[in-house]
Length: 480
Ligand code: PLP
Image (cartoon, rainbow, N blue to C red):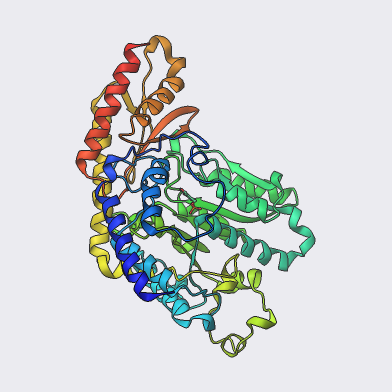
């Protein structure tokens, strides 16, 4: 590592990146390349001799950026966002510079201690119950993704029950989710050895706004117990991926508790909104939860990856995931004086991710972060109003946060083409490169998703996106 070379190249790179952000609207937001495009543009093998940074950057400009879907574009409305910010970016830079591997406290004490402190800060900003703070029996940990977060708590829950009933009972364990729960739950069950037939996917419908009702959960648990099975895990969601439905945490949590079921709350996307007093009620009932997750890397200006997970009983995680190899033994760990985050996650190695979250919290402050969230919700409300004003469209699910699900109505005489019509509209607008939206299926209908959440999005982008949608809808309806 040559510090002077880093200074020179670093400046060059920062200029390149700043120009990228400045010109980001000039790119088609959804990459328009065909599969395999890059192999034709790059050599078959690595260079034998060093190349210049400028040559590499030229290739990035000419060959890589055309194959990038620009998540930071203000015209990105497809999936839940993956925010970047100056603070998050600088935190990433610093983390890359220090480049330590913080598996245990001793491997870099500041990394562990900052993570504990910053997650306590965030827990307080969300008004999570004190049991989730690191000062008691619980605490927070940064995972790479919400998928990893739910996997580790599912393993902790599984092992907690198995310690009581015996390992051989694994085939009897039952997990409860809804048909709107994120697919990462199914994957976690697969990895956790939960029998596929023991995953109860409880049905939701439009009358409950796609939220999970307590009654079917209660019934399913009673039936399973009567059949000799062992309910062990429930995942509720605040802000489901398809339509941002909010499950009733308090009622679900009570049922979990009375049946000895671990209650996890997945607020991967919508958790960020709950730092605003007016949206905090969406996580009312979180006091019943055993674990809670929100992705700071989605809608909280913290560059990917940074998924915050809190548990009330850290010992459950540690009992499930700890290892104690000779080569990692050290006085602080042996004497139980410290947190060793390797025992709260799947991998051993871990990055200094708390730096970027710390920088985001400090450089913006909670007030600015709240204003940021509110602005996106206002923009989504504006889009929803526009949809409602055009009688050719319908809002397909109640909007709660910054996602609007909508549907282009087919002519009354030809209702069966509704799905195809919306699919064609999606393709038509996405191929313009002027905006990028996605879709889902709600009540057996193919509906479109417009998710506001990119940091650079302003009202003019939302209005322009709506104009393109209307234009393409007119073309499609005219050509029917
Ligand atoms: N949970 C919800 C509600 C989500 O919307 C998502 C992703 O969008 C996830 C979990 C998975 O997130 P990750 O990519 O961090 O695993």
